[in-house]
Amino acid sequence: MNAFKLLFLGTSARNYSPKLNNECKDKFDKTARRSACALLNDNILIDCGFHTLNAMDIAGVKKSDIKTLFITHFHDDHFNLESVQSIANSKTQPLDIFVSDGAVVPTIENAVIHYLKKGEKMQFQNGITITSLLANHDKEVFPQHLLFEKDGEKFLYACDGAWFLTETFYALKDSNLALFVVDCTVGDRVGDYRICEHNSIPMLRLMLPSLKTFNIIDDKTKIFASHIAYSLHDTSEVTEKVLNDIGVALAYDGMIVKA
Ligand SMILES: [Zn+2]
Ligand SMILES: [Zn+2]
Image (tube, rainbow, N blue to C red; front, side):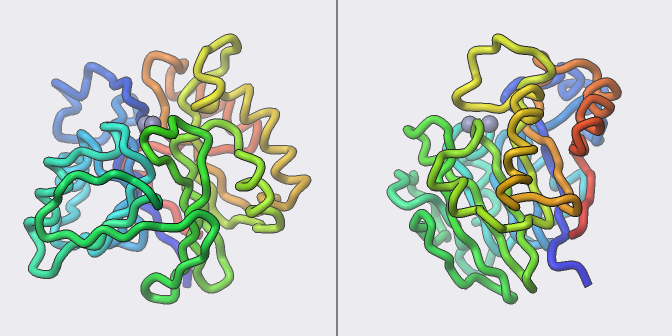
């Protein structure tokens, strides 16, 4: 029995393939990614951006299936008020929404907002615990990485954010993550200005061995690159191969992983 089942509903940064407006409007395609979002264990939604409702339709996920929503931060590719409200409206019970402590959240009907304190492990549902960790991203949008634990297995969702902040790095020491979703907004190029808010492939090349040294990841960790900017990467095939060489799988919309 796996602790985690993750369905990627979107794996793009806020830079989309034009195909989403026409031939890929109603289907998943590795070359036309939607705004980054994932469904954990069938009812926990992580982020809800521009394309989330459309992606849920394609995947056959009903709005009323969503029990809980975690918002990693308030950039509009991760939080779209209209879509969140639409999910909340579909429910008979109020939707539980978890955000970073201190976040300023607009009014959402039929929802209860829960604020996660940084570094404090919280008992959640069905034997899952959750820890919010500070992410190195625009602090105006209250960014957090999310560490889920169940049955001794750990899953870190780390979009968006570049590198790790020191306190987060130490909090993750000896985690031996089973599953790790990492920001890989920028492709295999150097000189991009986003180095302090998003990762590139050369940054992952540097970072992953150090994460291993600290036992944050190990040889068994399943690592997936997400938040892929369409115009900052090579083709999916090339990116997939380059990432495979460093032990990372390229996530795609509709992909299901278990750990
Ligand atoms: Zn983003
Ligand atoms: Zn962002």
